[in-house]
Structures are given as C-alpha cells and as structure tokens.
Length: 286
Image (tube, rainbow, N blue to C red; front, side):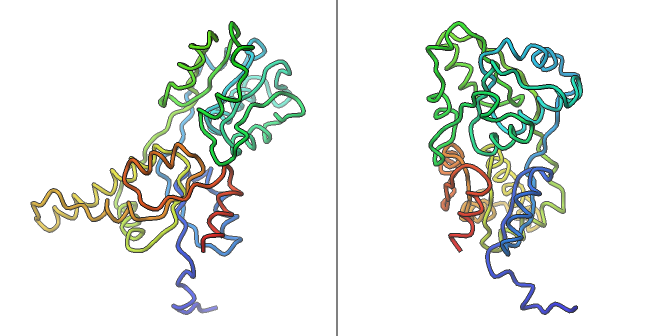
C-alpha cells in the first residue's frame, strides 16, 4: 500500500529516547502503541565489568549486609547477571537483607528478578515527583543501621553522595562498581540524525543527567564541523547548541531537571518516576 507524503508527516513531535537500545525497546513499543513516532538515539551504552571478583564475593555474602543500595536498574541487572552465572536461577534473595532503590524503574527491575515487598524490605522514595539520592536517604533508618554493613552497587563513576552520607551516620559502607557507561562514537550517521532532530521541535526522553553533557558536546561538534565547512572563524557561533537548549525534555527525576536547567535547557517537563508516568506526561502535553 502506498503512503502519501501527508500520511508520513508525524501529527505530534517525534519522541527521541536517549537510553541504550536494549533498555529503550519497551518504552518505544508502548509509545508507538499510543500513536507516537519514536526514534531511539542512544547517548550511552552499558558494559558489564568482566571478572568482577568484588561483586562475586558480595553476592556470596549478601546476607551479611543490612541493606543493598542500587543506584539504577543497570546496577540491579549487573548483580543478578552475576547471581545467575554463579548460582543459577534457584538462588533467592536473603530475607534479612533489605534493598534500597531510587525510583519506579528500579523497583520494576527488582520485581523482574523476583525481589518484592513480599520477600524483603524495599526502601524507595515515597514522593514520586522527587525520586533522587537525597529523598532515598531520608527513607533509610540511619540510626538503626549504625554499625551495620551497607552495600552500594553502582557504575564506575558518579556521585559519592550515598557513601559520604552513610559513613557520616557511622554505617560501614562498601561500594562495588558493577558496570560502566560508554559514550558511543559520534559518527556521520549520528551527526546527520542529530542535525535532523534540531530542525524541528522534538520531545526528548532523558533518564540520566550524564547524557545532557554528551548531547551538548555533540552539538558543539556539529557547530565546529559547520564552521570548518564554511571556513568561518567566528568561534562563538553555536546554533546547534542553542537549538538543542530549546528542545523539550521529559525527565523523571528532580536531579536531572536541575542539571538540565544549569546547562541552559529552557523547556523541562519533570514527570514522576517510571515509564508509565513518562508516557502519561508525553501524551498529556500534546
């Protein structure tokens, strides 16, 4: 069946999902079911840390920790990949060990791995409009945890907020890097795609503050390439950066919104945590 040019024009802004490809598919599918045009444009990829002896040891001794804190769904997936590799699918989360997560996506990831409120205590911010490290810390019984061991599973880079706050409360803290974020190469295909996005108003799904700096850095590269192509010496001209800062961002965490404002983004929609709330916000603002 032929498709007319009129039918090919989206009736609403294109949704650009910046997650890694594997983690974007579910959100992409649900948005497409709602009639949205969705393009996955990964601004980072996830790599597990191979031969992670620290994580192996922690999994074997997970019952020794009062709480295991996960900074993201990626941290959860990395731990359970280790569990399955070493212990198989019959392994069970120790009942005496609580879990702590920042948002709804991490709760869902725990549930997919068989960890729920029915078999352990899960700490999570109750205010869905502000799910970040600070609000999670407020949920923890710090006085009861004094002198006990807490494990923080995270990426190989990031804030030391949890570590510093827990140590200050006389809690024994161990951190394990379970994965790393890798920025993809900004090749010609990505350059062309980003240039196309900037020619119109898109809805950008941003679920990590670190991608914002990558996005602006890529825009700066577009500007430099344009200047070189024109032989222009005006180094202070940055239309791609300015256009990007005018795009509309949909972010599920207060901290991401703060970083976006600091970086000069003008249109920021702070949604509640979780894909369902992202979808609701994207549909309600059409």
